[in-house]
Image (tube, rainbow, N blue to C red; front, side):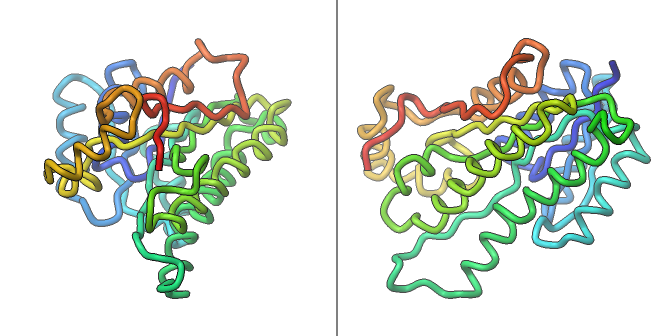
Length: 251
C-alpha cells in the first residue's frame, strides 16, 4: 500500500525528525508549517535529494480553513492520505493566578481543537465507511499530561490531557473502520522549543536529575517510536498512550 503521511508542525523538532525518517521508510510526506517556510522547504529538498516524495504546506492549526485546505492540497500533491502525525503545538509558562483568557484560548485552539479537526479530516479520508482503506494516526501529547506539568505549565499540561482523552475516545469510535489512533507522550526532548532553556547548565542539571534515565531525550528517539505506532508492527494497538520520557519525571 502506498503510504502518504501528513505531519503537522513538521518543520522543526520531533515533527522534522519524523518527516526525515518516514521518507527513508517509503512514506510520501506532507510537511505542514505555520511560519518556518525555509525550514520546511529545506527538509523537502533533503527528502527529494534522496529519491523521496515530499511537499511543504502552510497552515495555522488554529484555523479550520487552513486545516481543510492543507488536507486537500496534500491529497492533490501526494495521493490519498493514509497516515497522520499531529505534532504541531505551542507552550505557555504562567502561573494560574496570571492566566490570560486570550492566551488560554489560543493554546487550546492549536493544541486541542486544531488536532481534533485534523483527525476529522483524516477520518473522512481513511474510514472504510466512506470508501477509505484505513490508516493510522499518532497524536503527540506529553508526559506532562500525567502529572499536571512542571511549575508554570499547567495550561500546557491541560491541553495534553485533553489530547489523551480525545485519542482514547476517537480510537474507539473508528476502530471498526480500519483506523488506529494512538498518543505518544514525550518527556523533555532537545528541540527548538527547549534548547534555549537547556543551554543553562543549572537548569539542565535540575531537569536531568528529575528523570530516572538522567538525561533529556532526542528527537530521533521520539520519531522512531512514532513510526512504530504508524507501522504494521503495532497493528493490534489503538487507543494507547506510549510514554517516551526516560521513565517520567518528578515535579
